[in-house]
Image (cartoon, rainbow, N blue to C red):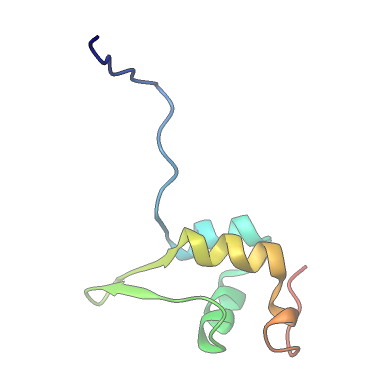
Length: 77
C-alpha cells in the first residue's frame, strides 16, 4: 500500500502576523496592538530593527479570552 501526498491550493495559516494584520484581526488600531504588547498580552518578535511580528497563537488567545480576563485593565472590543 503506497501513501499519496495531496496538495491543496489554500495557503497554510501563517505562524506570525505583522502589526497591521494583528490590528485588523482584533479590530483595534495599530497603537492598541503595541499597548497590548507593552502590557504583556501579546508577544512582539523583532527581526532586525524594522520587522516586528506577533505569534498567531497570541492573537487567537487574546481574541478568545480578551485582555480584560488577563489583567482587568483593558478590554478588547
